[in-house]
Picture 1: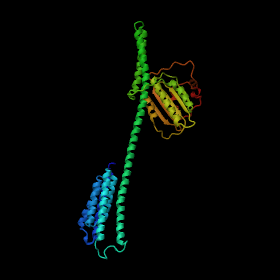
Picture 2: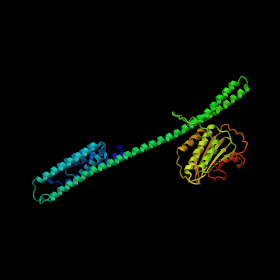
Picture 3: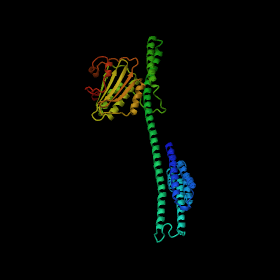
Picture 4: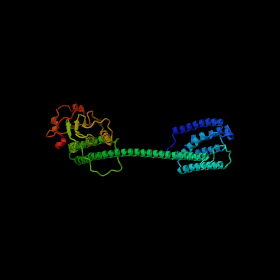
Length: 453
């Protein structure tokens, strides 16, 4: 059963106070009018009766069965002793019986309490009617008893009908209120359970994404460590014969160690190792896998172009993996939510000290994006590489994802023997000038990389 709220407790106190005032007014008027004639009890009894039937209602939801018994016994005694008050007592007993059905947590006790009160009241009513019917009364007193269906018989049947409706209504309304409250309680429990399940699912999804990142980190760092081991072994072998070559090899070992430590330092605060690590193939994706990713997106129905701006620089392996995964997630979202005839544009910009990945797409106008697990994963990947990420809808429709990651000790890659097509298309100049390109600008026309792959 739902616990009592302070508002409900205040409501019960106010109800008891209002009924007490009503009972005192009714007792005063009934006493003055002399509803029982010369046989009625004194006004003092009426005042005491008003307090007995009203005050317990302040605790009706705390002890429903006890309050119902007290009010019913008080009503029975008042009618028997002809206490000049009837109306407030009837209301109080109806509320008490109703409350037993609506709020008593012990349903068997609630049922038998109400049945006992109803049987007792009807037994008392029938006995009173029998005594009144068999007793001798003057000809001009009360209703006429002449005939098979006399006014007295009609009045008796009316009394039975009214009492049946009175007690039956109190019983039925109490049961229906209990059923409604129980349904509400179950609904709140199910809602709370669904909310807990949603939070668990979200936490599991984030944890799985972190484990995936950790696995990729393991693959990259294992490469560095293996290389360091081989180079250290070579240096130890040739140290005696060629100290200069051994020193150069050890310098390479030092460079690899610094690179691995830098990557670990970025990921240390965001990654947690999972106790259960499934066996999977090592992750080898990187920026070199973007052409295949773009071709796959184009083949899946999202025409996509890939452009490289600036001279390519050496990017740490872990950073390449994170950039590739961000591009993969952004293109996946574009295919899901861009709509028909949407297009995508993937740009990789190399600045003097950073690399920037921008994935923009046309499509539906998004007024208020709803972040999901994919957005969480992209943010964590950007943070894992010490960078930042921006995800927002475009004013002309579609979405843009822009990730920027700093490059430690960036050095240019060796120039390719054949210049790439994108390099010929871009005018020479400082690559940093292009980083200010607005994602909302129209996509320039060029041959999609995915179409030519």
